[in-house]
Length: 211
Image (tube, rainbow, N blue to C red; front, side, top):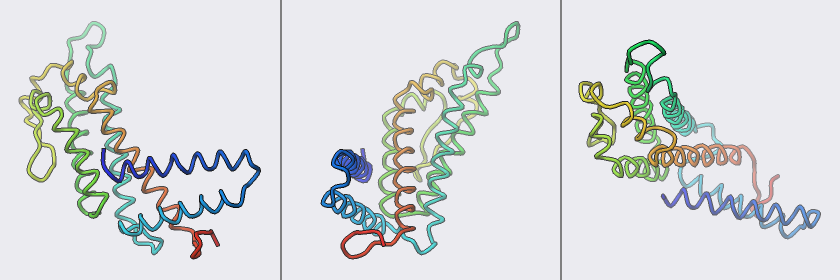
């Protein structure tokens, strides 16, 4: 798990606990201050990564969109009809092949947008995506998918066409560890970017209070 991913989890955990304590104490001023200070620290961390309120955040929004498109493509590969023949008909893997192709297109778009984004988001999440793939290198190779030097995925169409549908489902279905790793990374990207952009739309004073 990346440093930025863990930092966000720690931040959310702290803020959630503090908010819970504050609700039980009917609005403790000291806890309010701690929450604001934590928000300010997180905002500054995001600004150090390039996220700000100056209207130049389109590349981060593009990363978020591409990451969610990737997860959507994976979710569609969990459709049972892709792996089974219709009643009374011979199995046709055309839908499965298209679904895998859409997954690769979405994956490579996410890598492209992370590269354009640069900085900590790129370094952190590109590494997470790469590690998730490398943990299943043999399984991917078995269905004709390899990783190029620029971290993008490449399909051997003939090998994919000959792959067993159950092997594809075992690798890319929602119960697989690969799917869970990608979903976790995408959820972190979505949370981090949207939280940072939301905070960037506000103004904080030197003490960390919204003004």
